[in-house]
Image (cartoon, rainbow over all chains, first blue to last red; front, side):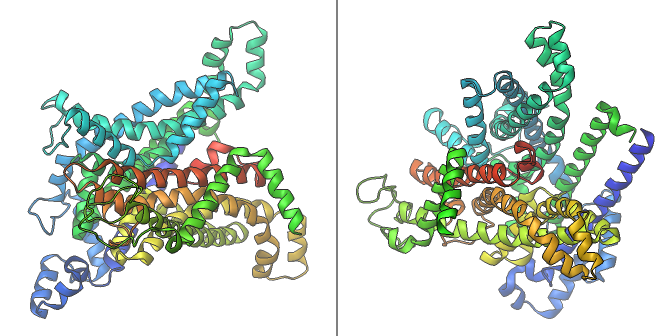
Amino acid sequence: MRKYLARRAVYAAVTLLGVSLSVFVILRVLPGDPLVAILGVEGHASMKPADRARIMADLGLSDPLPVQYVRWLADIGAGRLGKSFFRGDTVAALIAHRGPISAEIGVLALIVSWLVGLPVGILSAFKPNSIPDGVARALSVLFIAIPGFWLGMLIVLALLFWFGYKAPIVIVHFWQSPWENLQIVIGPGIVLGLAQGAYIARMARSCLLEVISEDFVRTARAKGLREGLVVLRHALPNALLPVITISGVLLGFVLGGSVAVEQAFGVPGLGRALVIAVIERDIIVVQNLVLLYAVIFVAVNVLVDLSYAWLDPRIRYS
Amino acid sequence: MTTSVLGELVRFARRNTLSALGGFVGVVILFVALAAPLLAPRDPLKADFRHMNKPPDAQSLLGTDQVGRDTLSRVIYGARTSLFVAFSAVILGTTVGSLWGVACGYLRGRFDLVSQRIMEILQSFPDLILAMAISMAIGTGLPAVIFAIAITRIPFGGRVIRSVALSVREMPYVEAGRASGASALRVMTFHVLPQCVAPYLVLATTHLGVAIVIEAALGFLGVGVPPPTPTWGNMLADSITALVPPWWLAFFPGLAITVTVLAFNLLGDGIRDTLDPRLSPAFLRMMTGGRRS
């Protein structure tokens, strides 16, 4: 197990280094002149060369690219994430202020997806091709196709119509007022969770059906166990592993999807901050936030791998 | 020839009724996109200040927006942009990824090792966020959006096709080709590549829906194909700028996205079941990136 952990950690470290390098390449190298990216072509052309050079030096953009890259990594190591080009706030403060909201949405989506997806999947697998199974499958196909941000828009619209809902303008953290905080995150959490739940139901169904045809399940039935016990005690634990993996992959969808869903609900989370930064071409903010999203994604997938190794001895010892 | 193709289609439709329905709807949407100038009742860009914010009526079937543009015409023209972006991005990304995957699986060794790391890195980003960053870096036009979405599709093609190539390269006929002195390039092109066509088609269809959603999300966030070009995502973005968004502006473009994605997903499921029964249904879409926004 220790060897496995070490190998996995090295892999993750290499991946993260590559991730940071590609973020840097995409945002600093591709646009050519970062000032053009920040100011736009016209803004750039209307500036005096001396001013341009001064701003570049101020932003630390006039050094050679490898130097910039290494300095960026060193800054992250030291906890300095730089400042927004257009606003005074530091990226670290932005993350500390808005991050919790987005994190709550993600966790809520995860909880909803399991609470909805797993029972539906089990119900489907209990009686495959029955009417409840058909309904469950049709719904999951539908929820996979509906874009979350559109569903969010419709919900907001309905709430606006019937209850006079207003999008939250200020951030209320959970420790300030749990009730108001919940009102902010519950919509996006449920919308994202339902979509992931559709995938989980699908996955749980097909895995359960596969496991149910195995010998040990027949043995359990042969010794006279009730069908419910056979499925829940014997089949389910063995079918859960792929579902857990899927949950890790799904997190990528939640992270990306939350950006659009936050916009639909008007929730002032980290995703909104990223969108605003992209529109304003605030490179320092975009660079660090994109890296943050990727780091979270990689970290969670490492955790999923570890839980897999912990749950399944065959992987641990191979 | 034609009768056998037709026969195959009928057989496919009998076995996968839902997929056939999805395929039919997909073809209809494709037709609408191609024939947009003939089908759209009005000019999608023409503002009409006498008819602003009109709910659906006989004159404008799906209503009009804040500057009086006809929603139906815009949805029809939106199909054009959305499908063009999705098809181009998926074909570009899946093709590049698949060719790369063939090379990885066939050549193996250090090239494969390095390529796998690169694909892993690309997959470490949530799709939408990677697409946003790329399209921001290279400018927000139609080509930038296509390119950005295409990049996010590369690793999926690469991984699936690589595994196909890995198993194909061990087959006796490939070995025979190698033994008779064919170059690696020749063996890959004439012996390995044809085996990858079926999984390639499966991949491409399953990713169409994903690409449409990413494009719409980019448009919705205001970082996609720039306005005034009507796209479904842009229309949704326009609709929420109003204090009280009119329901028809929020409803119809989203419905268009959902129906299109549903149609292509159903078609993809059927094609996969027919061409590649080895791949288990739910798992492949996951591993090959059926993503959500």
